[in-house]
Image (cartoon, rainbow, N blue to C red; front, top):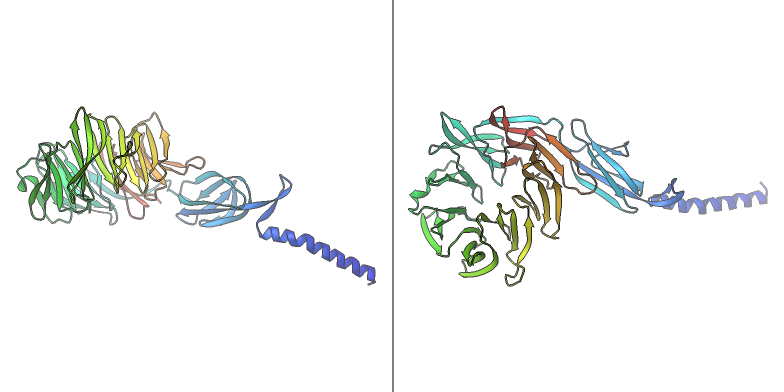
Length: 448
């Protein structure tokens, strides 16, 4: 090999190295050649996670040969049609934009079975299904013409008799205590009953007090205390010591206990005043003036107080730690407010024709759906990323991810109107009272 040939080879290798080395570096850093644009561009990453796991991932209808959870690297920036599918489940589909040098996450994908397994059946004489906060619910059965109150546990998937109800053929209102250990039964025009869930006994309200309660409410921290009004005066009943204390004599139209305070509404000057009484300091603060209309109710969620009226479908949200001297002490005023459910800092609310989502942190209020078809009720899915609504004799599960079109899945077992549904702790089994033929049935379905 002569000198000229050696120099030529050396220069060629040198040029090849300085051409290929940058290309290799760009390649390892995620750059790819875009044939459409005829230039090298930075790429991005899709990270996809689903429950259940092991679902196939498709991009633009092409099998990626990967299953969830996994990530797909080095994809050119563009819009992509993503599909996550698994045999026996509805597919999840979404069109997402992938920016360069970024990772787009889809980590809360829930796959729901197309034909859920029916895993539990129990007859129910009435549609009443009252859920606790620990995956339990009460329901009613008739035995020889008499009503019986039953307890269903979604964790053990067992039902047991709590107590017979011999007073009327109409089921009373059932309210769970804050720790889910006691039940308050309020029949129309009859004496309320207090029942221990664990079978520890029951006692009628008139055995504890000769006063006839007008409104009743559990203490939000201790189930040994019940609050009630009589002739618009507020009392506290100590179930442990069987004593009654008069708290204050202000004319109380509605009230709710919350963290050592009592929030209450009093009428005056053609308006209602929302006030807070703190027991520790015996101080009263007025917070809000609202129209003097029938139907106002009070409820709390952590440090949030909600004053709402289902007749006018209006709600005021106040934060207990905010300054009551502000001109606008309400966090916000919500309209079309009839049903509502909390999940963390998110409030799902609406009426028969629309559902909205309010974010307590950002104060963002977003319309989820508006329809001419009647919505009987709606509920959070346990993962907080999907919601369920009862509509057109169907139970419809819809995701809240607003990126692109929301995935929605219908089922033919709609819960009774205005009634609860119950999930197990894992969130893959749903229990609902629904209509069969001319009766009612408590059924359980394996959804995921």
